[in-house]
Image (cartoon, rainbow, N blue to C red; front, top):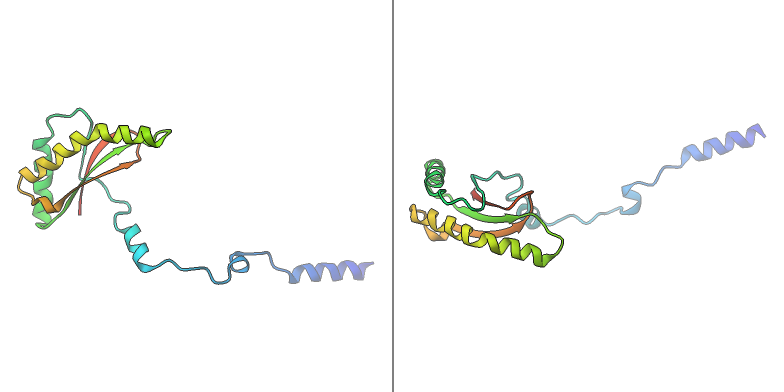
Length: 138
């Protein structure tokens, strides 16, 4: 009986638990292009955050844009309307559409301050906790 128990212990010791390499011995690697596209703006911090209803953003925005251009004269700017994700895609679209006029005004303000129109882009996305307009510099 002891020999049988000892044999069972050795048999179990020779086994290994299933791991990632057991289930997928050769996992498919992502392409370099998709990695760089996904990581291009990971962890970026907005240059300016503008709350909906703000009317006097022009002077602080101009100051921030001028400071960014002093560091990088050919900088590009992305104006993003961001709203929290709702229960339905239709609600998300309505929330983002309500931010569109302010986002457009911010983009026009940046170009009016001397930044070429081809270096200012508009974007819209869901995320965050509250609706805001974010200005990123790249």
